Length: 320
Length: 245
Image (cartoon, rainbow over all chains, first blue to last red; front, top):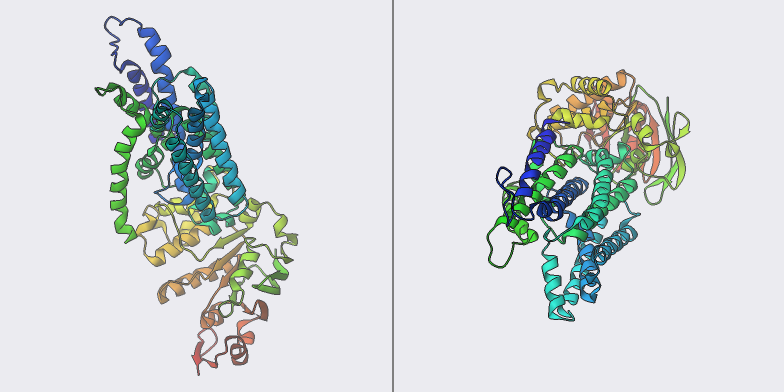
């Protein structure tokens, strides 16, 4: 493991225990424990921290892989329509009221993600073109977005409406070990699939023709991308809602610290994504807000949008 | 060791094109725009499937080879000089090792050889984005050489290079052929082909119009027939200049 990955692992080793102490009830490990400290840590904060690691890791790796695949530093895992597909599934479960049963919302979200993946494979699966693939993803994203708007505008009750809007903002509050069991296999399998595409993504640095001449099978790579992005993003959205910008910002921050090869960016992006989400979630928890805590999705958008603008300003020189 | 194409046909691009290439030679593929040069070299590199006809590497059908095995035998330098992410010259050259199973010692030796062959030792730590056009062309060629292919196929490798760098690159192609590599180049400049190639394949309307030593093939009559241009040669063999009349 190289120095960058080791540093990130060490930061995570430090950040995880700290995150367990922070929150509305602060826990001082040297002082007397507050009432219910064990259950606060074990039932609330630990699953939340594990989810932050899984979701952040999944989104970070998915972002790095997407940027490598599209050879575009502005690509985001949301582009392929899998995140909006999963969100649409979750919204439908809230709309119909099925979400009241514990496992239904993530199950609906996963069905949404799988449908988006199947559509993507059906439309662009056989063709070799990255452009067709991206356009198909964007159309699926915009269709899912439109259907979500229909669901919101036709919400059966004000309660369902508020549930849908709140859920779409993305959060890790009030999550349990059940959510961890849903997200863990999906995100970890997704990261493993994306990692297996590393060398093909490296070859793609030289363009599609050169990559094929280096022995890359474009069709196999496309399936790996659909499966890897689908598993990581689908698993993340199913438990945390839409959390944007992690997949965009993190690979950017990490790229200058690597040798430039997409394969070398996957693991640092996963680790840094996990760290970013863990820290951001802690900040959301401890910020004193009158109406409850700041939603994680909003916090990351507040952080991510200015970052994106900064990036565009920097790229403007190259693009001009 | 041979690379042969037998009656390749691709609708609208190639019509029953047959060639047999030899290692240790610089072969230039020539022809007017749209004559099928890029299609022929793409078929020979295994990147374009012909509708009819076959490409064979050492008498085995190229399409039946696993892509990585094909990539180890045939290095392809595309026309595009794209490098999507900024990286050092050494990392870029290392991408040529992708078709091989990772073996650190072998990889490092092959990368060092390729860097030395292209005179890039002083530039190996420099970012690719900070290279001049000529240095970038050399780095991209070193990337192909790092894969230690037996065949080097390049689609218009001299495009976008100034005269000095064109000459330097042609000299390097010659040196590679002298080392036993089969070098196949798509070229536009007939004089460069005349002076630097051992053999030329002239394409016209998707078919092979002529194939042989440049001095025998590139006659004023053929140039007029294929390029619809009247021209004549001046100078001595190896230093010929084409005068358009």
